[in-house]
Length: 251
Image 1: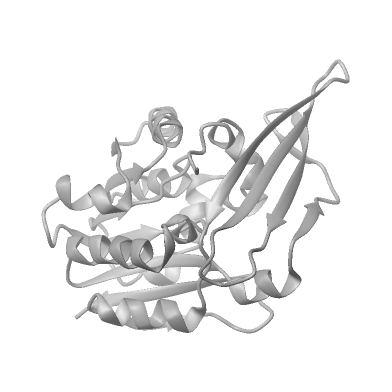
Image 2 (image 1 turned 135 degrees about the vertical axis):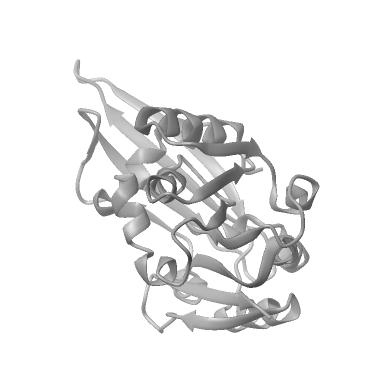
């Protein structure tokens, strides 16, 4: 079961230095943002701790931020307050989005942070994409980032321990990933992520969570985007790259 109730409290240790600032996080999507009006109505539907949502609001966009995790929604609210920005926040899973927003509401929808693999299998993923597509206006764009699961599966089950400390708010931590790679693509996979914080008194405090995920091939994602009425404009997938970005427009 994926909730991010534990990891949500320490998620900043999982964000790269280059994207920790909301301004810098939003700037990493400058190519896609350049296609939008400055006052665009956007949805960040896997908002995490809010760096992208707040960065978009700083740019003057009208921003709604949703996440299936209550902790993530709270942390996005807190970050918006810290920066004095207006972000509409609510807890909602992808399949619940049409219950909260009218069809054709948004100029752009962001689903970033490698979140789509948490959708429950091919049917759950297609349902998530259908919900997002419904909320886009015609010509609006979905911006999605993904792990390259072809590479993840090729490496197999393993333990990845970071080779450097990550410092956030004056606290150092080691980040550990434990991958459980199932025999078949369609099977449920697991990632256990642990943040081992080194307290000032020398004690180690560990927060960890076991996350469920259902991987997919890049060509499967491309086909599913077409099925929900989205035309791919950008796909940075390449063999050997850890992550990629897809931008698709509603036809």
